[in-house]
Amino acid sequence: MKELLNELLMEDKTLIHVPFGNGFFDIYTSVVVTWIIMAVVIVLVLVLTSNLKVHNISRRQAALESAVIWLRGAVGSMLGEEAAAYTDYIVTVLVFIALSNMVGLFGFTPPTMDLNVTLALSIMSIVLVEAAGIITKGTKGWLKSFAQPMAAIAFMNVLELLIRPLSLCMRLFGNILGATVIMELAKSVVPVLFPAALSLYFDLFDGAIQAYVFCFLTSLYIKEAVE
Image (cartoon, rainbow, N blue to C red):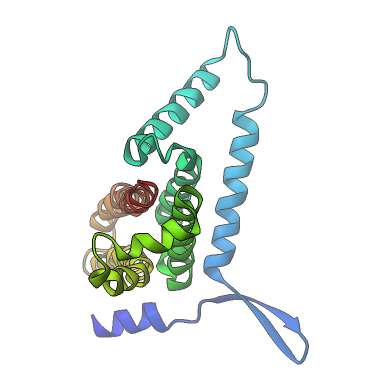
């Protein structure tokens, strides 16, 4: 187990070495896989949203509209009416993280197994949360919120602000890393059928669950910020 963790955590994550000055500019595998996911999503969006109609819509358009309405409804129920303006952002993050967690089915290393990726997603979410609070309450109201319900807990509220991104980051990273460790251990014991069944669970079901948990917590923080 220790050797496997060292191999996963300490492996060279650089995929492309680009000559730069007297050295190289390294591009990580997680960045390249993220580019691939973005390219696939952009192509799918362009294909699925072409030739949209108001009347006599196709089955493709009907399925697409149903999926969009379902996603917006699921996210909107978490955000509430006051934070409904942030629905599309949360939906986008949900789709991205879910796809990132599922690329293991195609032989790629999930970008979310890179601490840099999960940290970036966490910082983005917390910045959005605090920005939502400032937009809703104003700068003075946002600052006063740290002293609520009493000034004595202002330090705890500020500390919570710093802990939240770390919590989001490590929860997502830890779960994806744990799933990868279990998969590698299963491959070393039963190299064919059992790992394939586990892959369907960890890459599909668990990957979707972790994406939902990340977005649920972000939505909860935004909802608290705008109340």
